[in-house]
Every structure is written in C-alpha cells, then in structure tokens.
Image (cartoon, rainbow, N blue to C red; front, side, top):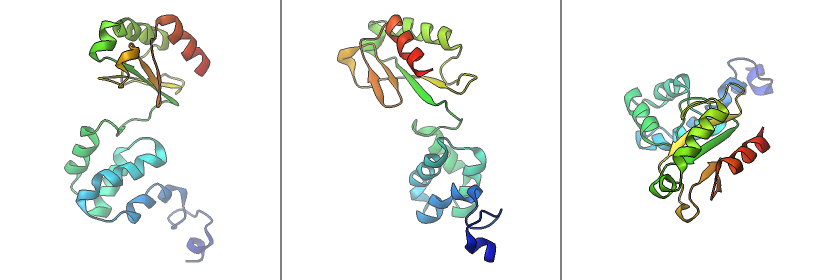
Length: 165
C-alpha cells in the first residue's frame, strides 16, 4: 500500500503511468449510454484508441465490446490507429472537387508517399480525405489539424507541408 500512496509509479499502483490513461473511465461512470464520453476521455490521453484500451473499458464498465467498437467506428472523431503529428484533411466536397481537389489529392499522395488513412513513416503526417470542411467559398481546402487553408493549389500546398517538416 505504501507504494501506491507514494505516487512513485510502481507497476500496478494507482499512480502508474500505465493506469493514468484509464483515469477518465473511473471518473465518468458506468452507464453504457456514456460510451462516447468514455472513449473521448481515453482518446484524449493518447490521440487514438487501441483495441487493448477499448477491451479494458468494456471489462471495467460492463459494456459489450460490440457496442464500444460500433461507437468507435461509427463516429469519425475516433481514431483506431496512431496518427501523425499533423492531421492533414483534404476536402473532397462538391465545391472543392470542382475546383481541383482531385489534383491536390494526387499531389499530396505523391509528395508524402501515403494514401488517405495512412501516416508517413516518420510519423509527421496522417492524410485523410473528408466530405467537407465547411469553407466552400474558399475551395479547394486543406485542413491541418483544426486550421483551414483555402484557395489551395499545388505550390501553396508544397510550401505549407515544407513549413511543417
């Protein structure tokens, strides 16, 4: 008990880094209707949801695994794979498509050597194609994390990515 109360991070103690990711689970209650909040709390710590973390949540909360996995795969804000330092979202909505987002997608795939849903080998960038970023008047758009860059072309995109390397 002394190790747990000392906060030294002894494996298995209440204060170990391994258990820290699950602290939000205990604080948010056991109700299955709270699954989204529970998943958000876990993802907030690591940036993504591992199968191990979701399984532990199921055991601790008594929520069927199929329900947790269903929620995690239904909502796009949940990530089931580790993402890069920068999340690059290419808008593929109608306005962006008409204004050339297909060319931008081809450019970025060649430049970063990844396809949508993949992360660069250096862990710097994760690429995703999205339906809309909500800035149609400035199409075509790229969003890096939560910042939207509009009226994008290959030259601007190259400069943006080089600045993030």
